[in-house]
Image (cartoon, rainbow, N blue to C red; front, top):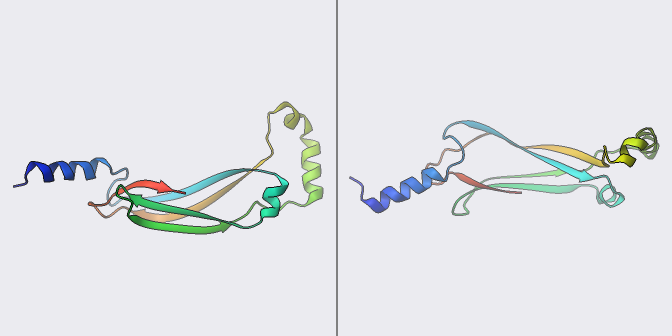
Length: 120
C-alpha cells in the first residue's frame, strides 16, 4: 500500500514523460544557417545535444562536428545570378540547411527518470 505522497511522486514522474517507455526514437537536429562569409570562414563547428530528465540528470549525449556544405565561388555566383529575381523579391533566402542524426534507436527505459528536456 502506497501513501499519498509517494503516489503523487509517481504521478509526477509519469506525467513528465514525453516519450513512450520501451519505444525506439530517432532524434534529428535541423539547422538553417545564413550563407554568410563569416559562417563559411568559421568552418567546422560542434553541435552538442543532451537528453535530460526533469531533475537535470543526463540520460544521453551526442556531439557532432559539422560545417556548411562547400560550394565554389563560381557555382555560388552562377546560382545567385540565375535566381536573382527570387532573391530580390524575398521568395528565396540565402540559407543552407544541415541535418544531423543525433540519436539512432534511443529508448527511454528509466521510469524514475524519463526524458523531459532536450538541450542543444
